[in-house]
Image (cartoon, rainbow, N blue to C red; front, side):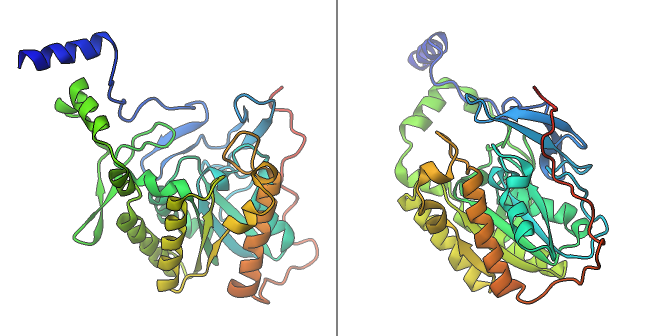
Length: 336
């Protein structure tokens, strides 16, 4: 026992094997605010800008609506067009690019009969995407709901994952049913350096595979389908690739496609299209997010899927002058 105590003291003196804080500190409290319904969101009706990538000269303007999403218009406002709602993470949010260049805006640009609303948020996994649909789906009044799943989203169901630094209610799968569980706190033993050292030393590739939470992700896909149908809308699923296409990426997209097909949900894997021009052409320099060309390719692919399979030859009749005024922000000088 004395030896273990001395080892713990030594690790603390040398500041080794420090357990990570739970949930940690908020990364951008000036931009994001905790929300018990959806984990976190942007501050409502905000106008600001951010440098991204952080070490670049790229300045991106950020505008939020009254619900705290990156949109220059409000959910549910009068609009005669068919409505498409897109759920996602930082790719859907458009991290690193202007609002008007996102793939959701590309879809609307290609088809003026459709209105595309964006509920993307950096760091979200399928859990918070589903919660956002529960919270805002009826307000958005969608005809189609698109679940845009980035490959890294699979691991974000980890009980200790906190997105941009806010702890939030998690999902767990018990007896085949989704239940809410509180964000965890570290026990006395969990705060010991020796325990953390042992945990890290026994980490294996087999254990890392568990962090994909395939069963829990599949249950959330089913929850997404049920919620979408209850809204009277058609569900659609996209797979968004990373810069590479590793073995685990391939398994993730294969499983997602299988879940979609088993439920009759239209599915599109964007891997080949995004990777075809090369990572340097479709991703921000030295970064894992898409640049404007990447978003353009993704938007064209989603438009093709919607136009040929989900919404062929459909659209609201728009009278001249009935469309809302231009809403995209350009040339704003909120930050210098």
